[in-house]
Structure formats: C-alpha cells, structure tokens
Image (cartoon, rainbow, N blue to C red; front, side, top):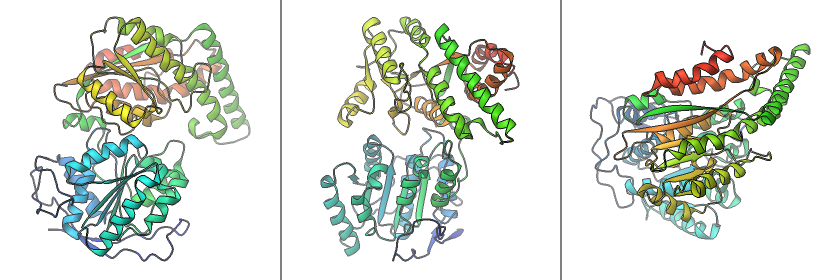
Length: 506
C-alpha cells in the first residue's frame, strides 16, 4: 500500500504563529482506500467514545477519493464539493481513519453558526462521539473542556471532540485553551470560506498540523487575499471537486425542475434603477479616462456601493409579492416549501428584507391560509429545532427564511423553494440550490421557482453598462436551467431576457 509521508508545512512568516510550540512530529499516513472497490471498510473496535465508522455507512466513490487525496497531501486540503454531497460524513471518516492510524486524540470542528454546532453534534453521535459544544457562555463549556484536555494528556481519556463557532474561536476564553490541545489534533473548518476573514484566520491554531477545510464555494467573494490565506492554512482544493452536475449524476443530490419567474419593476423602481445604472456607467467612464484598469466590475471598491444599491432594489422589487400571490394561490395544498427572502444584513432601504419577510408571511398565512412560520437569525436554537420537526412532519407547510438557512443547515425534507431574493454573491445562489436538492425518503425530485427581475428599457449608452452587469448573473440562471429536468422549458423562459440584452452567447 502506498505510504504518504506527513510533514507539517511551516506557516508564512507574515502569519501569526503560536510562540513556544514545537511543530508536530511526522506521521506515516496510509491511503485508506488504495486498491479497494467497496464503499465501506472494516475498522477495529475502538474504546468507548472514540471515532468509529457507522456500521451501515456506505461511502460514495468520490468521498473515498477525496479522503485518499487528503491523506496523500500530508494531512492538508480543502474539500470543494456541492452543497448536500456529504462533506460532513467525509470529514468524520477522515477522523476515524486518523484515529486508527495514529491514535488521533482531539477533533476540533469550527462552524460559522450556532445551529451548525448542534447539527454537527448529531452527526458526531453517529460516529460514536460525544462532543463538547463550546459556544456562547463560557461557564457552560470551559471547565468541561479544561478537564477533558487534562484527561487526554494524562492518558485517562483516549479521545476528545470539540465543536465551536467562529465567534467563540476568536474569543480569549477559547484562545486560552487552544495551547493545551495536543499535537495529534485534527481541525475541521466547516463553511471554511468564512475563515478567510483576517481576524478569524489569525485565530486558527498554527501548531495543529492536520487540517481539513470544507466548502462548496471556498473562494471568497471580493477577497482574493482572504481566499489565499484560507488555502495557505488548510491546503489547496483536493480532487475530486464535485460540481452540482456531478452530485446529481451520482445520486448525491436529487433531480429538479426549474421555473424562472420574470418580474417587471414598477415605474418608480424603474426610474431609480436607470439612475443607478447611469451612475455606474459614469464611474466606469471616469476610470477609463483616468487610465485606471477596470477589470471585473465587482472588484472595484468605488463601484461596490452602487452595485449593492442595485442589488437591494432588485431584491425588494414590489411586484415579487404579486408574483408570489399568483403562484401560491394555486399551490395551497403543497407542503415542504421554503421561501427565501433577502439578506437582512445588507438590505438597508425602505423595502428591507424584514419588510419583505413580513409581507411574504402575511400573504401566505393570512391571505392564503398557508401554514407557515418565519425562520430568522433571531429564532432561538430550541425554536429552530421545533420548526424543523414541524416542517418535516408537514404540520408546517412552509418556512419563510432569510440568510440563516443558507449555509450548512440540513433540512432535506424541502421539496420546493421559492427564491424571492438573492444577493449578487454566487455563493448564496450555490448554497441555496444545494439546500433544496438534498435527498430524503419519498423525495424523487425538487422544484425551484426563481424570481428574476427584468431591467427596464434603457438608453443605448446605459444599455451597454447593463449588459455587462447582467452577463454574470444571467450565466448562473442559465447554468441552473441547463441542469434541470425541464431544461428546454426553463431556457425558453430566459430567452426573452437574453434577446433583449444581446446575451444569446451565454
């Protein structure tokens, strides 16, 4: 069997390095699936509360390949796999193999949100682990963590699992404990793109050599330096990458129907939209006159505020509510439906995402008698769990949500999604579609209704600016349409928009 020598790469000198901590020893890591063709493998029976593969688990071929790639890359790397394709299971399988090979002592999992901590905890239990949930109040976890770290060092405890949040990771309480983590620690960064932010990246433990990043979209939006920092820490993207098409073809995600719903702006919105587009055009013209390289529109700092205003206007378009009312009037009997509104952190106008959220809930619940509840960042963890169960059972027909349902949340019972607003960030689009396509018993395929705003008629000069802005957005819609079971029907719906702006080459 091929052996890969594990060596811990020294971090760049510009990085924050733990003082007085010697680099980890070298391990000889074997490729766990070299020469194997079956989806599962035998493990020795470990001591209680140590990583153990679930007896019924059958890893997919791409998961076994990804695990092999990580081991061959000396215990470093980033898994770039479509949302819903099983990154969590793949990561926990790595921990099981490390325990078997080198007696791994600590598994540290870092998540962006509180609800993902509890979700990871449920998955960890399937792998025979009893994690410490280290987030929020120090008193609920710090003493327990100190005690179990001491037990691991003394040899009275074989294994420790800790799950924390990004915000807890950077706090003094958790940072003071990190120096006591043993050498044989594996850190897993869930939704790792978030960890490329400078403050978070500086808080990641340098002495931990075994590192695995997970993200369907590891490249950070508007942040090339942060993306590079992320790959410097966790390691480059491992093969195989798994696209949405790959995941559907391999049965990791379900097939789907895609229905674009084209929405016109009101007269007032059209005027505001035209003015914004003209301002963007003038900003571009100024850069051209000053010989400033334009490059990608989204990479220009002076254009960002204008592009964000444009995105807010599109996201909160009033006619989306009329389109929703018309759509759902004939679908009152459907269940397991998710309604995506805008991002509350970015919607600052008079028609904010909270306004849209309340308006959508009123239309569905009051006007149409649809059993629905809202799901926001203010919804407590306990209430979220209740809502999840009610949604899965059908007691609730739908959830009206904003950003908190984008990353990592596992509600595979979702059969239908109505997307009223998406940011320009392609990550949100990718996360949302993957969320809806997760397999679930009795779910043969999903249905997605995507509200796309039609820009107003513009003068010739402004039209050219609009073409450049629309090109990237339309490419995402077209890609998603092409992968749908009703691809022909979906593409015809988008054809008018492509013709209007001379974008038939997409």
